[in-house]
Picture (cartoon, rainbow, N blue to C red):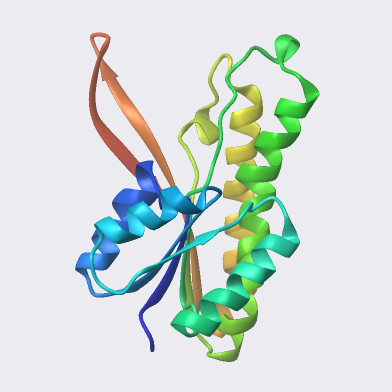
Length: 197
């Protein structure tokens, strides 16, 4: 199987850290972000033969076009990481409807669209792996983050259901829920909680 990995949200944060690890392990990467220049800089920092793409995951046409371009330039994508996400912290009564929609579109719908686009190739090749990056907030909730919590909680349910749909095709779907441990009001090491496999 080829070692081609698409990392949506791969230009910063958790996505960038995943890209660095995957590059060290010999994967050929597609670093995808809304801002192409930022994606190119992140891909360039990895060395090697990695490519950058621009995509708004909330737009199905963008997602489909990006997968076509990745396949043309890298080959079939058999590893997908969904780390693209946004957060607009606010109490629900103060949250604008457009902020609710943008969080749900990016954090939940975006991952659904990229998974749907990846399925075509993964089903054909009878194998693949998907990791969706959720949040501990999606499991436990947090004051001032009700919409973000809903988007990440929805991602957990989606990932569990998709894992059951495609397991017979030898496609693994997992969601991880990163979170921060707090001790005596001091931030300590982050934790990652795997949810399904």
